[in-house]
Image (cartoon, rainbow, N blue to C red; front, side):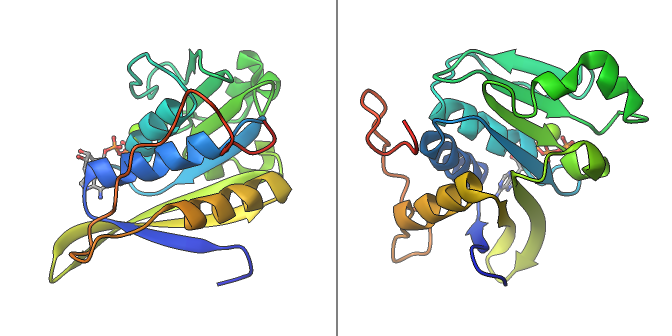
Length: 184
Ligand SMILES: Nc1ncnc2c1ncn2[C@@H]1O[C@H](COP(=O)(O)OP(=O)(O)OP(=O)(O)O)[C@@H](O)[C@H]1O
Ligand SMILES: [Mg+2]
């Protein structure tokens, strides 16, 4: 692993959502997050958590068919899914440049399908399914490009702790004030 990279292991949907929430909570400036990983590895679950961490109250559903959902949070949340996108040209019709990152946080499922449309400054999250003695799990790899992304990964590593049984300590995060947010 290179400097600034990290990975986190989760065993349940709730744990992945929690990791997303910590990331969302750490973000108070515009940022692009690119999510890569096979079908059903938890990209949408992660986005659901990140949206919560950004103060979104609406239910977050997969934008597979609509390509983009926008939610109102402390910052706007742009949830993209590039899976069904045939070519990058469709993105131009959508005016995606306005959102990457735009004024808010853009979370892009299958973002690396069109790497050339992604800004260099982004947080890359690769989700991987694995099986071991404990059953099924997910490995979430974080690769930050740029200072904001690096600070988010640092904040994540600083924040999360595990119980002795190996499950994630999902301590409630404080939302009313924002001393924990970056740049806010
Ligand atoms: N550790 C885990 N983290 C996240 N999801 C998990 C985990 N273990 C099992 N799951 C299950 O895996 C599925 C993840 O679904 P999700 O829709 O988030 O995947 P996705 O990566 O967005 O897929 P797609 O590429 O189809 O959009 C859910 O059904 C969830 O319950
Ligand atoms: Mg999805």
